[in-house]
Image (cartoon, rainbow, N blue to C red; front, top):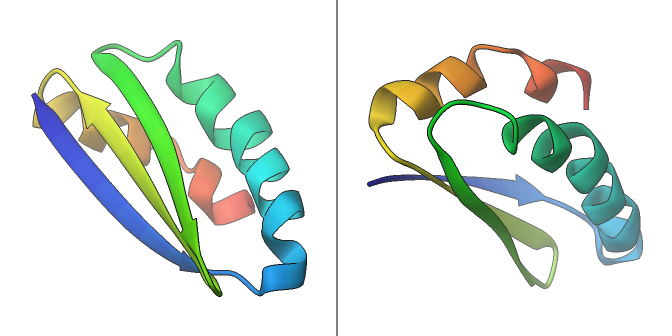
Length: 72
């Protein structure tokens, strides 16, 4: 298994919008990708950590190359 993490600075008042957008644009795309195991979001004041688990690192890298992070 391979786990990738990303930390996003998010203002408290934008947390709900960020989570909705992340589910729609990132999670919905990820579930159909090779090697996907699960994704989680952890929140704290002004910060969100995304945790993605993949069967192997190359699957995570392939997903990251798709580019949804550039448009969100």
